[in-house]
Length: 415
Image 1 (cartoon, helix red, strand yellow):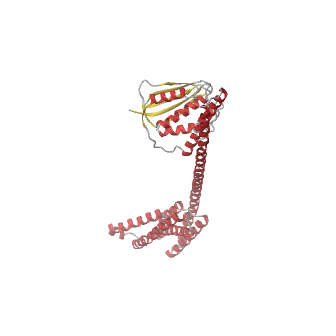
Image 2 (cartoon, rainbow, N blue to C red):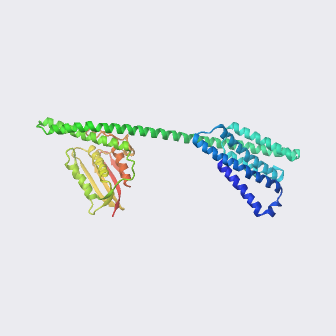
Image 3 (cartoon, rainbow, N blue to C red):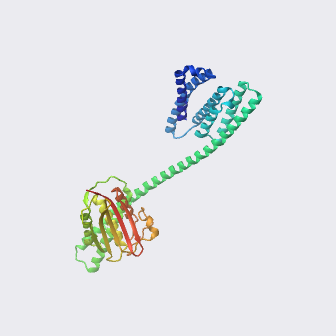
């Protein structure tokens, strides 16, 4: 309504300016006094509707709901626009059949722009028809002319009703869809907040007992123990290390890894990846034959070393998990199209084709135990993908069952 008031007021102000700019030609126009008089009326009344629209918009934003007064005000404005168009048609020639443009325009605007209930639309039609009939009698037209004019008015109002109902149905459906989307978004946000709170709480509370168990195992190792006890202690420490990894995944999931701006530094990737491969070869619970095949030339990229090592650890862990004992894991580094290309390739069981679209999803339904029964949280690849994307990079996978998988990372290179 606010926009309609502004447009209608501007049109009448423009017409008033034209009266001043071209007084001689316009004042000689047919029925100029009537148009001049109604133009001043429109200029005086329309600002009242404009001011009222701003007031009711302000009240609606505070209350977040409409009331009966607001609905009646909108209905009054619709009547005002229709009656203005209708009266202008009568002024033009005293015979609306010869000047239907303004009347038709007013009806079309109201039917398309405003949304009224069926009962309100019928009341508006009745009021419009009564005013139209009064104006016909006021003009003292011939009876046959009045019949023709009434038929035209009935036709226009009939079209007005069905156009109004069509747009009402369209807008109400659109509004309901928006409300459903809003409610679902609120529910999703609440669910995510609750999930993250629970994950953060569980992960935080698990770290202390895991650390205590690992410390006790390390203290027991300092004493003289037999071979069986030593193996059991190694199993305890390995289990604690896996548990710490799961806790880290849970904490990262709780934090959403949603910080797009991360601290990075220019890093030579040959040296960086070679160090990671060597660490995996020497650590006690690292199994498998890990081979790094670097580039002949130095390749630099802007990375966060801590977070990117987490990515590589996740990919190598997955490769070992789904490979045979002492299976080979190849890490390749190359440069192509101004991108550093890192490939982590295993020759294990591979990924079933129907699981490939889901492996990067959080809590992915593609998660499955490793070949030696290792459990998965379904978070590692999701977190890795998010970290890589925060580095303006991409990750993709190619896999074939019983032949292995290759994860390919692409990062922008820097000079």
